[in-house]
Length: 147
Image 1 (cartoon, one colour):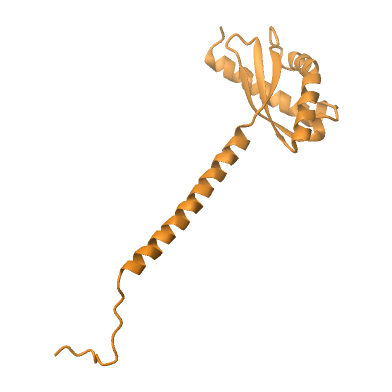
Image 2 (cartoon, helix red, strand yellow):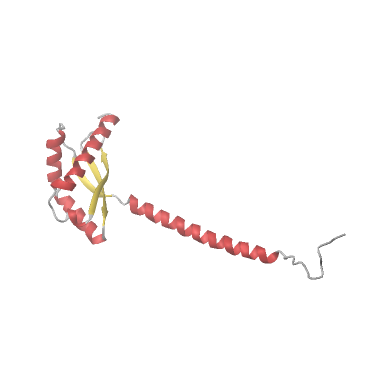
């Protein structure tokens, strides 16, 4: 088992190298169908397996096409990583779509909607409480002198 520090260093190196490969080395048109970025790399403690989480911006069709392109490029990515990183054994690479950004956006939308609903409910409640309070209008006969 590698130390946590070593796992973190290998993970950061893999993330950097795969990001570089996505920008310049991988020539598959399917990978370019959606805007792709590597968000995280989860390396196992024994450095034998690595999950590469990618965020893909685009339509659902473009996302599926990009994931298919990444799956096809896995052997190329593993071989290139082996040459660049010079590890004793290059980890097996698995690409996973990172949906945390989309989930975060959904949560923020729900919170915004809830805030809007609460704001309109509070405004209705404030209007209702103002109707219950009698308003005092000075009469024309009252001259304002109480003496």
